[in-house]
Length: 240
Image 1 (spheres, rainbow, N blue to C red):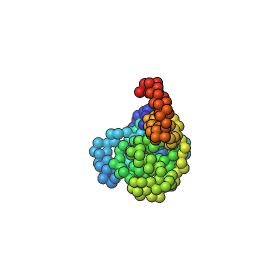
Image 2 (cartoon, one colour):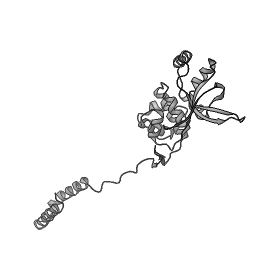
Image 3 (cartoon, one colour):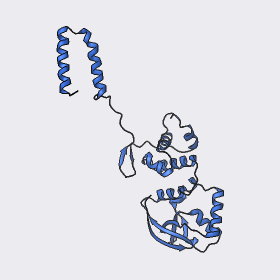
Image 4 (cartoon, one colour):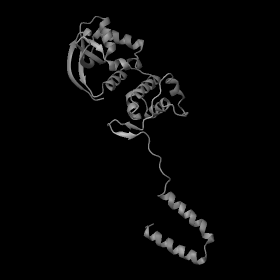
């Protein structure tokens, strides 16, 4: 996920609030009690080494606030420990939601079911995204992302999708999207059109030879002689 750091500074924890983008996905990427305790002990011992990332905005009362996209657990622990300041980085990115997901998923030990539920959440909000885009964001294989899409679209029984269905119990359904957007912003057909019956290439040549072989017993000697000449000419013309 590309982004640009536009500023760094220490900031009072009271000036930081969770962003709506992070609030929407934080529960999908839970931190274990053990990892949180280890993080708390690290901050208590060494302070916050990795800055909180987010953007500046105005609160309802008009005051300037820093909306956190990455680092909510560090912010909460800083408040628990009564730290005077926390390091922050203001960033600019085209997709704050995707940035929040990428930053926080990288810091979690998510189970496969956690990743499946994250992929389902992304698809529910953005069914137009390609399976590869969803797989990259959620940290799963693109084939798994495709199965999750099929489950959410309510399609017929899908082979080997039992574990996916179990992980997605209670999720809503999504509409089928005819065109999806790839990582470069290009709109692509959701599925490739079925190929027409092969009317060229070796299969067609083979079929023609079979038909000739079947017809040979019905030909007269004169017809066979004419057919031989025609086939010889055809072979020469085709440089076989």
